[in-house]
Image (cartoon, rainbow, N blue to C red; front, side):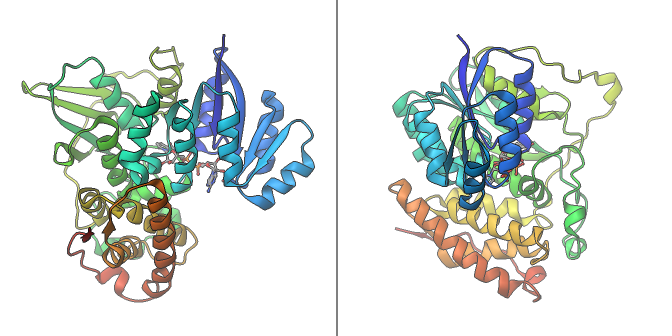
Length: 401
Ligand SMILES: NC(=O)c1ccc[n+]([C@@H]2O[C@H](COP(=O)([O-])OP(=O)(O)OC[C@H]3O[C@@H](n4cnc5c(N)ncnc54)[C@H](OP(=O)(O)O)[C@@H]3O)[C@@H](O)[C@H]2O)c1
């Protein structure tokens, strides 16, 4: 029997690569696809792959898709995505949405006890313990789709309890590795979008340039593996060949290597606990020659520090950080905010809102809304002033009981 698979975000970078992988497999039956606005590409995918149900998050785009497509059912709005999850009969959902919009579908998937291949790291950053507790309560599997976490997941499988001393996530360093903070003041959107080793969607590419992506990944690792923050480190590795390391209590370290290719991480999650052959480029170390490693420059790239501080503060702080980051990155991509304005907006949003206790998903949705509103105002005031480059990133967010 083929496994029934639903892909959320099928028009994006991860989504289209997942569809590529499926072309080489008869192990899956696609039961649904989704997009935000890109309804024409979504309809083309559904028609080509004989999928009968799609969801479009944006209402206008959804209305156009409903008018134009007679091949099946179109569900509309964020609630349409959740309805697709709940009524799809899927055995496995690949959540490849970008941003905190992925949280609702993650909660719906795990709440239904459906296994989840999770590319949408923001779900774990924002939802944290509530998300992992939900998976545990319903028995749904939660498998990462992120090269570093796929690496760690694979390395840790079968290790005895108490064997792990430290997890190490590698970072390429992005297009601005080696620059000082002052040299980042005038970088352009085009420069920031030129990632040296990975081809990805716009938001994660900017997160890689600021190193916020590594901050989100530290939180992702903490929630996936239950590892305390002080035992998760980041090291810069420009070749992106080593994806993750596990240091063991006896002094040995395990490393996961491969050419940068997200299809390996996607295929790992889709086939887990099996491993399927993939026609990817094989690693020959003698051809690679040198692998180099260096520490992160937290002065030039304060986003990683801001993320760690928010992670340790806990409560709503990671949700606030994530929301402010989404707003600031969006503004940078639209040329409304300089590159250094991204950490400035995040820092000021966090300093102003602090951290509240989280008792239910509702408090997260509320914190997300509030942080987005404030960050949008801050974009206006930070842009065009010297605050973008002169902010000093002081105290950690306050935790309000
Ligand atoms: N790309 C990578 O190599 C990579 C690697 C590791 C982890 N990830 C993670 O995987 C996730 C997806 O990244 P990506 O690079 O594939 O992103 P992407 O290329 O921007 O694609 C995002 C997908 O989600 C849809 N979408 C965007 N906003 C939405 C919303 N508000 N509601 C519903 N659907 C929405 C998009 O639809 P439209 O096409 O209509 O915009 C698209 O299908 C992110 O969390 C990222 O951090 C990505």
